[in-house]
Amino acid sequence: MNQAEINKLVSQLRIRVNPRLRKFRNPLGPEERLNKLRKTVTALIKHERIELNYPRADESRMYAERLISDAIRYGDCHKSTMEMADYWIVEKQLIHKLFKVLVPRYENYTIAYTRLLKAPKPYPGEKHLKAVLELRGNPYPSLIPDTQSNRSLLHNVLLDEARKAFRAEKYKEIAAKVTANFKEGDKQRTEHDEVAEKLQEDEDKTKNTGIKAETPT
Image (cartoon, rainbow, N blue to C red; front, top):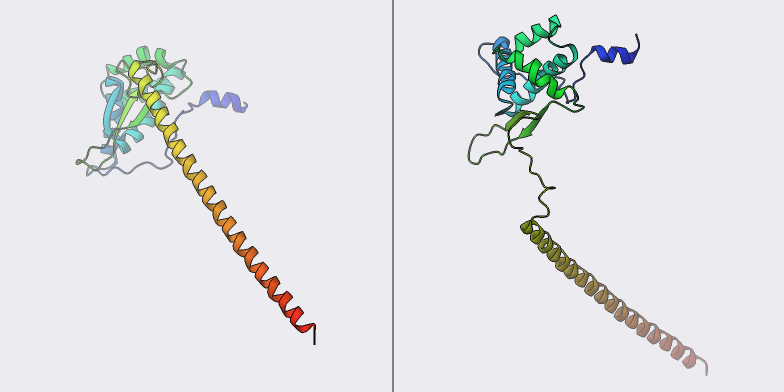
């Protein structure tokens, strides 16, 4: 069996995976940590967009990616995949959504199935970094602003032209300052050269006078 055939047997995640698992503080131990991650994965499949703390969102994302990837690769007739889906999805009616809704949506995807975005940090407010974890292709409005399709709107055209005029004015000011600095430098160099020439002439005259005074003797 060559490397290409081995790669087909293993699900390849399209996201960066943290080599070390995060240690979520919980008085009930590691089992409750897994329960929280299971609830997060279940909520993601159910609502397709959730907001939570960034570390927990990043940790839950790789489990959701692996679950969807195996569901696409093996289908609902594979025993291990069904056992994994039964473990990670707390609300069992969502298993049907995983195989009948999400698998057809993502079977031709060449990118990650989820998207993780950092949420704005309120001030004053909690110090914990918030994030939005969502499934791609969800029915909600996009959180990423569309800056391409609305460039021809009147107010955007006016803002672009005002921005260009402002930059052109600033460039003119910078060019004028640079030119003035060059002229000042040339002027100083000219004055320095004139002073040096006068000093050289005075030195030459002094030498010539000394030679003429010594000649009669």
